[in-house]
Length: 622
Image (cartoon, rainbow, N blue to C red):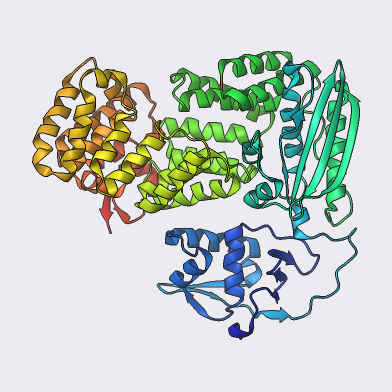
């Protein structure tokens, strides 16, 4: 039967219909779309075309990820997502059966529909492409540069509103705003974001009046299918946003079942218009220059006017949090972030941004289980936000040793925001840690092409790792020399880095390299050696040069600082699990190191790292 099923056919099984050519899965009872990621659709398509066959995992991986090296865990996660979407096991109905040690089997009967039944009128149905839309930043046409913030603010609010429409896929702001200021064809943007429609527009303000023009663009053709202009007082901005989002939904002809558009929000985010202006200015400044002190000042002024403005509180929490994670401020910014996030959650327990901030708070204090719980809650509330997936990978999965799962989350983030430099960098980084060296090399170049500085961290570190793994030790050293802290340069650190990498190729140079490293570590004034990423680099160098006593001296400094401050630089712990640090992890001292960082409690409840089992409190390599 499998051989007779066409690749672009229409299939029915149980209560579902799969239209392969349109990449659409619906419920047969009411035509309701079933949301699946692109890889989940590809997997379902392959399973459906081979009903009843036992398919080994390597066959499925080759079909779903052709010409790409991925881990088996990626397939496991996709199959789990499929089972949830299909309700596998509910009411006794089984779709995908796991045959231990062999593979998967699609066990429900499949019927191919050779001729598609006539479709309903356009007003009652829609093609799948019209159920997904990306909102691009609105261009500001105001003569006053101080009012440029209106465009970003209007677009961001529309994203929030449209994301609440049942059955409508809307990429998050970080995904669509990555295209701001870039001269890219709208059809390419739509392909990269996986949507069928794009919304773009402009905002012009004069005095207390604003004019908003919006156009809906069909991705396949690039043609405008709807356009509308609204002239309003700024005092009516919330009503304008509601009207515009409702008009977009009508233009998309979203089938809501009962024909009624549910309320997209229960009242405006604030009733203080000046607070809202300040909020829009803060968002625009953040989009332009990052999480600056100016952003914090605007948000504080906004919250002073309306202490119950949840979105502003959540944004303040995120900004303080980024000040800590980017090293712009010390641990005091963590407390400020926590206070703002807790205030936001007291007003709205479903604030995804606030839950994500709380997750980072817990991770920074070594509370891995609480961190995972908060970040997974944030993902459930807003699955379209790529930053939450990458944060979960960087701040929980990487540190506790679940590198393959971290890579899968990073790849999900990249699928959601393919043009965002950060999403590419995260996949490159975890590919490096998982030993997928050529994937790391390819993605590092993609990040550079997107604008990531080639001679700054973390790209310079990736380039060094690529060179090291290829045996190109001089090149690997030069990439690190480019980012060496100034105090190390003053102590002839450049020559020492070159010597360390020469020793990796010529072991006879190892004694001189180790002597140089020990001398540097003995110099009290070299403060950069006590900060990330130099802490991690020296730990790696000592391990690679078979000096585990020195490596554990560095590790104990990590533990002592954690015990002194209660804070740890979580994002830098993932490399402890790279293949080349196996000797470090096999050492008897690793047990107490892992216990001091809180890993063992996490492993007891959530399972050990890939490739290990937990016996009592000891990791055993499988």
